[in-house]
Image (cartoon, rainbow, N blue to C red; front, side, top):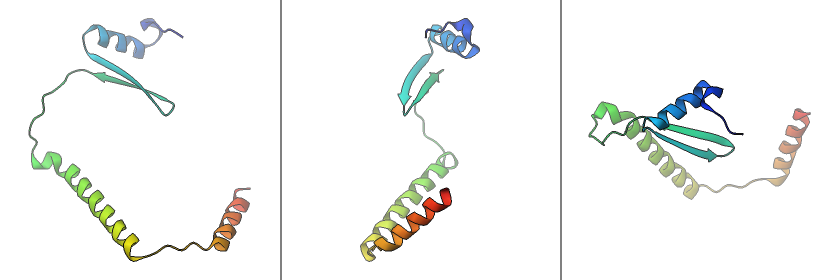
Length: 97
């Protein structure tokens, strides 16, 4: 279906953005339509420590977690008891009914 700007305030805003020279981008991902409205582009600039502190800590946490899991996988083996797993799956199926 083709929509006009008068059909929806949202569509009207998107059409106006396009007419004003702003950037409008569409993407389809996993069953969802994603619309990006970019009003202006800013040149990269240095940031203060307080501005990036959360990003740095999140990256550090991810790295440490990955290293820790690799260490655990190296030190310990995983053995799955098939009968116990089947018994657990059966109990889950009974609970969901």
